[in-house]
Length: 393
Ligand code: PLP
Figure 1 (cartoon, rainbow, N blue to C red):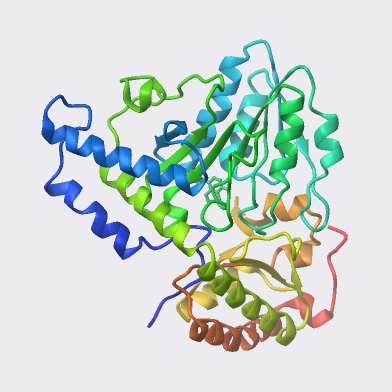
Figure 2 (spheres, protein in one colour):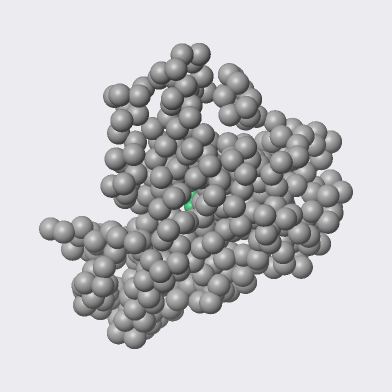
């Protein structure tokens, strides 16, 4: 059975060109870039090249890039750097729809003496900007707002928010893990932005490598304290081959940002239109206009996301649901709850996230398979049969 992979916001296939670029650095050029000998030095030069390519993807300077192990590490590094650089400040502003990399970290910090302001979103997943501005205070150590949401793809006005934070002298970080490589990101144009996280495995580089952009002049303290790697900003011997892979993936992403992104967006639109038109009681989650080009979050009312995913899996179709099985009960995701998506719809939400490797044939296949699949599940659903609504919940 052929796999149809439409779960690219979870992770992506490593591009063949990326893998080829990486391979010699496992077996032939395996020196330590910090070594004094030329064998290691050659590896150091290749890392410098990867840093340039990675920086170019977001229009940063190479020395503003710190390589890390994952988006989560980049996010933690940014938040802790701001807290340590402003020891007197005990307040953080973030949103209700962040990825757990920020959400759970802030919840942890809330138990350890920090005050968190959680910015709400409306039904379409748009941020309450007034709330955000009203909650930036003299005590705020950092404002952290994701650039685009991983579940709905909704894009936030980061340049504007970063500017507002800068005017108040507050450090601003954005989790751009889902954004970089999907839409143009220019840190020079977003002048108020001080730190930005992105991750290799979302852009066809391997898992286990990511980057944190730190604008020159930003107060910074390392999260991983150790050797002098990354100019003292992140200890630990570099994940050489993966960093080289990230550099190559960044180069490919720059190349694909125009035409290929347009193709992916057209495929997403076709899939979405087919499903919305051919499956009754299907709703789109999030702002249709300000969205990542590859993401579609749809709710199929009166059916459970997990059941849909299982049946899709039998057909070889991979996607994600907007609910998670916690302690035996299916809980809609915190993102859909924050948006106030009704219970009946939030439970049946599926995220399709496409990449440059998806084809029109795949979109046609999924479009054909989904209507009978949802219909079969609905025939088993007591809510659908009764036409009942549990909106009260
Ligand atoms: N932030 C966002 C918005 C994400 O979507 C993810 C991963 O899905 C992360 C952070 C965490 O990235 P990583 O898996 O590289 O730790």
